[in-house]
Length: 342
Image (cartoon, rainbow, N blue to C red; front, side, top):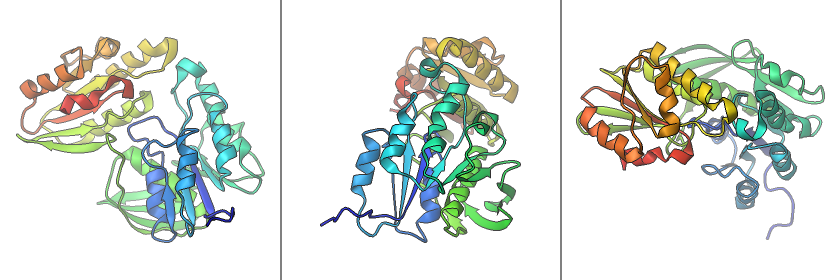
């Protein structure tokens, strides 16, 4: 019977990154901590005022580290979750144009995420992207602040053949990674910073199981490779996914893109910018799905096949995809692009 004492000794809280890569560092945090500590972590997107407390209530006695993802959809929500979790280490993965329909500006997005920094107890640690100007005003002397990424205290020195050499406050960390995407390597730096801030040594092989619909690689009959990354999307994650598609070996590169939701009055501009980015990367074929996604085609100078529904996109792929093609499927959760492969 639980006597009311904490069943875990370390709490690492990660702000949610609203992308298909939205492990937000959490998956790597868990993988880095698990060989050394009894660890429990948020399931899928149990990151709200309902899911986070339920995750805490699942914890078994003897658990030494709890990794919690925190969702930010508006002002005051991170603060509410911090009050429940009382974290020892807080991680902000990035700041960018998400939930602008509710918050209006990226500066307000930064302030909403920075509630995590503001409400950490004195002496706790926070992990933030290096040289993120929108977070600088929110940093506190009372915290042990770790920065990650280029120019940060935790940065990637080299990566070759899955072997990563990372410097963490002048300490050399060597990891064997089963992934190579630049955005996930950056997430790994955040995870290393969080682990070291929690005074946990890290090293060795890292095997991560990513959440469903987030970067899942599916090999279809006929030699077509699909990256099913349709859990969510925003301008940051869309650029990252397209960059990875452009850098992957393929006969042709096809992007099946649904709309990016909750971007506010500048939504059309963000969609045009992504279409322009895809064109500059040399993406061969663009399939916008739904009326809101048509903006991608405005600045894309390659072959375009707009469709109305995910089902139509699936039927189109059956006709157009050829052996050796690589297909990216990505859009906001509301679009339901998982139905492309149904």
